Length: 150
Image (tube, rainbow, N blue to C red; front, top):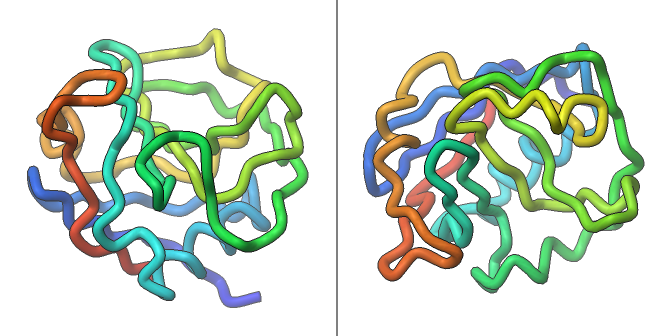
């Protein structure tokens, strides 16, 4: 496994830098970084953005019903709280179904603690995340222009 420490997202609303947390979720960090460096996230929209809660993206179809062709990941739950700026994996009701979809907390969402895999935290550019158009789905969704991990 390569040791990734940072995910850079160029959104159509601005630049975002995310500190990766392999100490919390090594398999999920590896997946996010691999998909980013393969270009999987480039052009993908944020299909669900709920003001005061979170922005969700990572589905290449933009519907929230799909993911990558890679196998689903086993949950790597931790005690890390879902505070503003925390990045976590989306999943179905089955905790072991995280694949490529993720969300960024727009506000504290500690009711999610211990139920979703935290893999990173926004260290700069939260204003760009806040600026994403809201909606489920947004009328004119914001998108990831480019994603790279290092």
